[in-house]
Amino acid sequence: MNFFERQAAARRASFRLVFLFAFAVLGIVCVVDLVVWIALAANDERTPGQIAAIVAVVSILTIAVIGLGSLYRIASLRGGGAAIALQMGGTPVPEQTRDPQLRRLRNVVEEISIASGVPMPQLYVLEHEAGINAFAAGYTPADAAIAVTRGALERLNRDELQGVIAHEFSHVLNGDMRLNIRLIGVLFGILMLALIGRRVLAHARFGGRGRDAVALVAAALTAMAIGYLGLFFGRMIKAGVSRSRELLADASAVQFTRQTSGLAGALKKIAGLHEGAKLEHAGDAEEVSHMLFGDGVGLSGLFATHPPLLQRIQALEPGFRSDQLSQLSLRWRTDPPNGLEEDLRLGLAGGATGVLPPARSEALVTPAMVAAQVAQPQPDDYRRADIIAAQLSEPLRALAAQRDDVVTLVLALLLDADATVQDRQHAEIGARLGRDRAVMAKALRDEQLAGLHPMLRLPLASLCFPVLCRRPRPEMSRVLDTLHAVVNTDGRVSVFEYCLGTLLRQQLRASLDPSRQPHFGRRRIADSRREIATLLAVIATAGHDDGHEALRAYLAGMQRVLPRDHVDFVVPTEGVVALEPVWPVLDALDPHAKQLLVEAVTAAVSHDGRIRVVESELLRTVCAVLHCPLPPMLERG
View 1 (cartoon, one colour):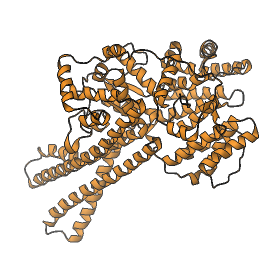
View 2: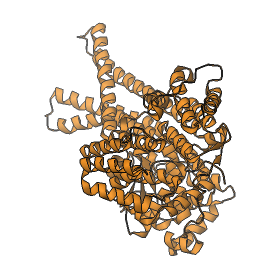
View 3: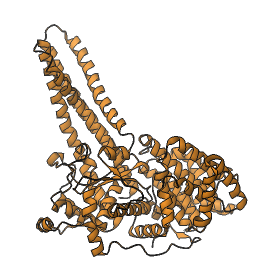
View 4: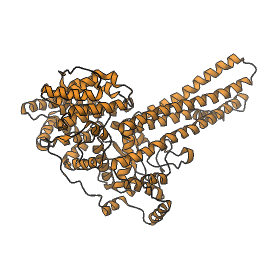
C-alpha cells in the first residue's frame, strides 16, 4: 500500500467514523424519545399530537446538545498538536538542549523529518512519566507535535526510539492525526448528556423533596444512563478504528526504517518492564488513549485501542514466544535497560559518513519511482538524511534553532550573487528590519552560505520554519513583507526563491490556523484541466531554455495525466508566479488524482530521464503544496 492508497483508506475511515457517529447519535435520540414518550403517555392530559410535538422538540435539543458538545471540544483543540501536547502535561524540548536523551530525540526526529520530507514537528517530553509511550497530534504535518515520555528516552536505545518515532510519523503521514482529534470531539459530544445529567443531579440534591424535585432527579438519572450507554458504544467505535490504524502504523514504521528489531524491541520493553506504557500523571489519558503508541490506561477487550502487545511483536517477529517475554521481564526486573548505555554497547552512537553528489549532478528518475517515494522513506533516504544533517555545520544549525537569528538565516539564503542586486536587497532589509539585521544577513551569506551545496538549501530552510513560525503574528507580517521585497528586488523570481517563499507561506498558514487546513480532497482530474496545464507549462519552461524541449516536456506530462485531452501549450508570462492561483484547486484533488499529478510533473521534469537540482527543488515544492512529501534526494543509491 503506497502513500496515496493509505490516504484513500484514511478518507474512508473518516467517512466510516462520521457514519458510525451519526448512527450512535440516532440511537441516543431514539432512546431519549422513547423515554419521553413513555413519561408523557402516562399523563392523560396530553393528546398524541401534543406528545409527538414535544418528542420532536426533544429530538432536536438532543442532537443540538451532542453536536455543540463535539464542536466545542474540537474547537478547544484548534491550536493543533501543541495544544494537545500541553494539555497532556508536555514540556517543549529546547532546540539547543544539552540533555543527552533530549539531544538524541531531536537528532532522531530531524533525521526522519529530512528523510521523509515532512516539516520538523514540535517536540515535547512528558517528564514525569516512567512508562514507555509517545503520541503524535495535530491537523496537518506542518503543525504536528510529537511527545514522548521520559521513560521512553531512558529505556529505549536509538534504534528502538527511531522505531517509535517512525510509528508516530506514519500517523502524521497517513492522515490519522485529524481523525484522532475528531474522535476526541465525537466522544465528548456523546458524553454531553451524561455530563448535563450529573450536573443537574448535583444541584437537585438541594432542591427539596417535592414532586418536581423527584421528577428532576429522575430526568437527570435517565440522562446520565443514556449518556453513559452512548459512551459505551462510542468507546467501542473508537477502539475499532484505533486498532486498525495502529497495526497500519506498525507496518509503516517497519517500511520506513526497513528493520523490525527497533520497533519490536520497544514493544518488548513495554511488555517486559513493570512500568509498561502506563501514563500516571498526564491529563485525561483515557481521552487520548487512541493516539498513544502503547496502551496508556489499561483498556482491554472491546475497549482496547491497541492490539495485544504479543500480537504486535509477533507481527514483526513471527517466531517470538510468550516464554521469551517472561525471560526478558525477569532479567529486566533486576537489571532494567538503559538506552544510552545500549547505544554505546551496540555502536549506535556514531555519526554519518559519506558525501553529497556534485552540485551540478543529475538524478535518474521515473514517474512511478517518484510516486512510490512519496512519504515512503527508504534506508538510503535515512543514510542521505544523516549525510545532509552532518554536512550542515553546527553554526548554521544553531542559527536555525535560535528565535532571534532564524530570520537572518532565511534572508541570507535569498541574497543574490550579483553585487548590485545584493546592495538593493541590503537596503530593503535595512528599511524594514533595521540596518544591523541587513549587515548580519550579508555577512552570513558571504561567510557561511556562499559555498553551501544546493541540495542543503531546502533542508536547512525546513529546519528554520518551525522556529520562524513561533514568532508573534504582527512580527511575522513584517518578516513576510521583507522576504517578498528581497525576492522581488530585481523584478524577477527565481525557482529557488519561489520554492522557499511558497514552502514558508504554507508552513505559516498551517501554524497560524491549523484546524482550517484542507484534509482529503474530492476534486477530479477532469475538473482541473486548466490548472494542470498551467502547472505543467511552468514546470516545462523552468527546466528547459529551449522552446522545443519545453514543449516535449509539457506533452510528456499531459500524456501521463490527461492522455485523451488536448490543451495547448502556453508559456506563462509571469514565470513561476503563475502557479499561485492553481494551488488551491490542485490541493483539492482526491488522493489517486494527486498520484497521477505527481507522476505527470515527474514526467515533465524528467522526459529525458534525468532531473537537475533546481528541477528537484521545484518538484519537491509542488509535492509539499499537495501534501505529498518527498525525501531530500530522488535517485536510489
